[in-house]
Image 1 (cartoon, rainbow, N blue to C red):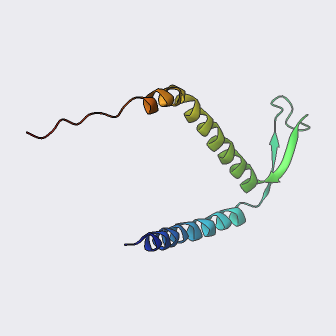
Image 2 (image 1 turned 90 degrees about the horizontal axis):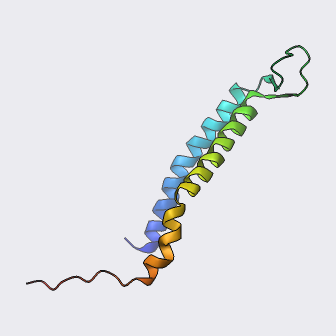
Image 3 (image 1 turned 180 degrees about the vertical axis):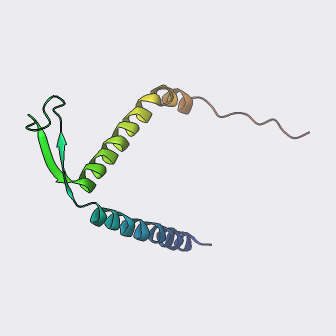
Length: 101
């Protein structure tokens, strides 16, 4: 398999995954397009001080996006000790393999 074949195969797999995923996302958005009120005032539900009206799918997409960003930041912070050690590891010589007996 040549490099060009591998690139074509990767693109075909990406299309085979992304097109159905995009169709599912559009179907989800169409099924959940009713307008809801998101209120940030727990004490007054009739006339809240801060409230937004938006389609349900927009709220869900926004919350998923926030979750992905927060998870990415948490993973990045957790890997700090490995990123800090990379210059030292790159400067050290590779392991010596003993000759076969």
